[in-house]
Image (cartoon, one colour):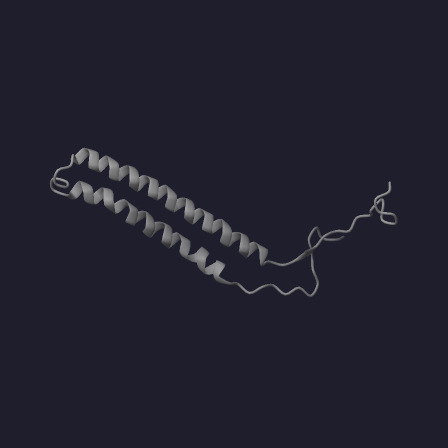
Length: 112
């Protein structure tokens, strides 16, 4: 019985590269980046009277909107990098041989 996946004989797997380092570092980058982006809204709320000459509620709302939008952007960038690194890792895996199938026009291509 033949296997559904026949490995290409003589193919040597590519050594792991920077994609593994990227995948290992993404959880830390996600957490630290998220925490840093949550700091501005906290700082605005901790200021005694906000900034001089500004409405404190308006300033807090504006900073919240910017922080949330940057947080979503950060998560999207991290997710996109993760997809790219995972794709490279999978593509460096073993090579497989496709199963041959008979062609109806193998002798005279283009004619039925």
